Image 1: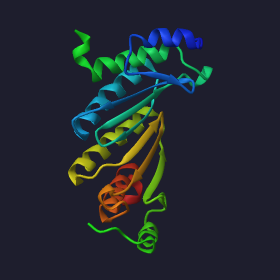
Image 2: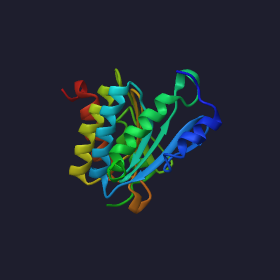
Image 3: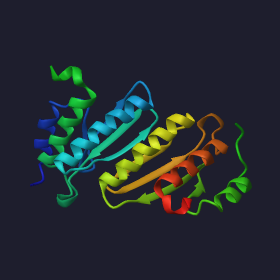
Image 4: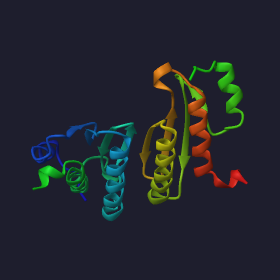
Length: 98
Length: 98
């Protein structure tokens, strides 16, 4: 899995408007109705992470979920991060899936 | 729910050696075998949070869970935080429950 260039990352981010690239990672923040909705999304994301064997740096305060994705082994962003970001989007923004 | 004094907080922390007090909150970090074990503990903690109607500022990276507890309404630490901290301890350190 090779590290993507900043140019490649910005190109891929055009399809993921919620995400931003900085500090060798891609980042997004999602807001939910309440803690239960937020943690339910986190649970679904956790299963995707295990399936993809790739895990986020993420934090939660009540209804807000903040996620950073990076590939530690290459100290940068790879296709693995975009695969997980897309899986996360499909969970948190299901309407955009249609 | 009233804000506890630094002295009261330090006294209560004697029974919670994993936790530290600074920046108007109590903080702990827990390490698990892997992501699955860590997220399983987070799920159990999430149910306690809902039951107590009190929610943490927490973050996770793979097998490490970092938790900060504070009572935003009083901008400090209250009994609610200690109640949740004890519930968390009972989940992550079940051997100490005996």
